[in-house]
Amino acid sequence: MMLDPAAGIEAYFEALAEYPRLFEPRRYRRLVLDRARLESYAREHGVALGLTFSNDYVLVLVDLVEVGEGPATIVHPYFRIVSRGQLLGGHNVVVVATVADPKLGNVGDIVMVEQERHALGRLMLELPRGFAEPGIGLEANALKELEEETGYLGAEPRLIGTVLTDTGLMDNEVHIVHASVVGRRERSPEIREVITRTLLMPADMIWSKILSREIKDSYTLEAIGIWSRLSTHSTSR
Image 1 (cartoon, rainbow, N blue to C red):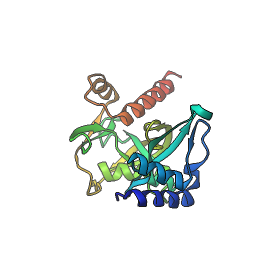
Image 2: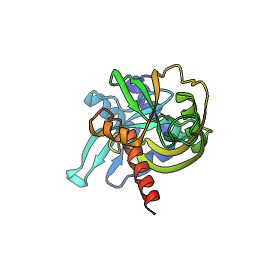
Image 3: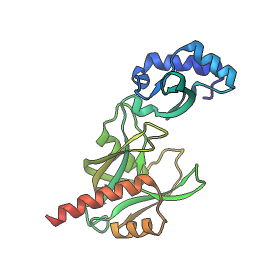
Image 4: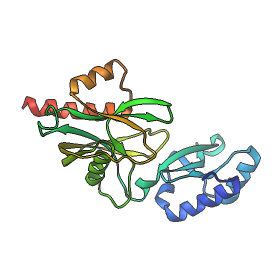
């Protein structure tokens, strides 16, 4: 929901009471948590401050921050995006799922999905992934997303890495999980997802598409990079 300026500041202090860790002191960029100062700055500068937007997935906070000391202090707005599911204890995941049963495809091939991304308005080739869901463990969420988006059934999920989406913009922490593909059933993606097809691809082909810029999704690049490094290290022993 989009909030009006006054409601945004009110919602900001409600979030402060409910999620105090989001407002813990920062050493260099200090949060202004005085309601009167926030209201005065918003009014004088014509900007929205506080909790300015929220939905099922994110909170958008526009903080007022202070940088510097004494006369050199600068005060300005700075916005951040908070993952709601992560805030409530869930785990964002991206899944590197490799075929383990030769009845399902070439052993070692990786499950990919092609789907339309709304922000870009075009189809993207990516690894399966999903938002954090409170109450679902990391490994369980990875297997759930894999099955829903592709129909492939995973086993032996293992955390192989963790990345931050964009440290200048959001707190979104994404866990990279490897799983072995051991079965398949009909996929059942969320109604808001537009997945056009599921593919099995060898790692070499994925790297070729990365280098030719056909695959640009950052999560996919990071996950394939980590998985390839682990695979190479494992086989070289």
